[in-house]
Length: 70
Image (cartoon, rainbow, N blue to C red; front, side, top):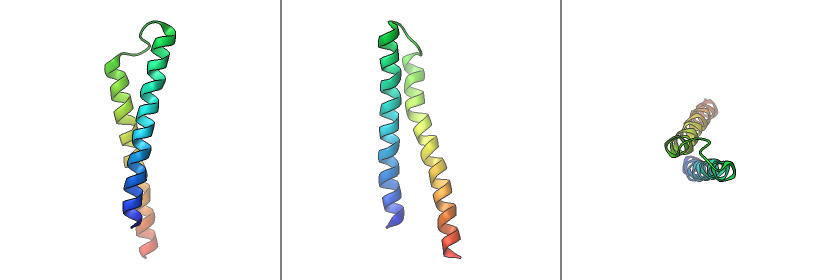
């Protein structure tokens, strides 16, 4: 049950973070009147950073679960 909750909320958190990152850089591009970073870099940052964060959280979560079993 806890693993299911972790994946549900972890994925929702990653999606929210990706959207926020995308919108922040989009806003900076609009304010600047030009490109702060390109659309390809913006898309990569919006996808890779939240996935890396989710992976890191899963590694920490799985280590805590193993300690509780012993």
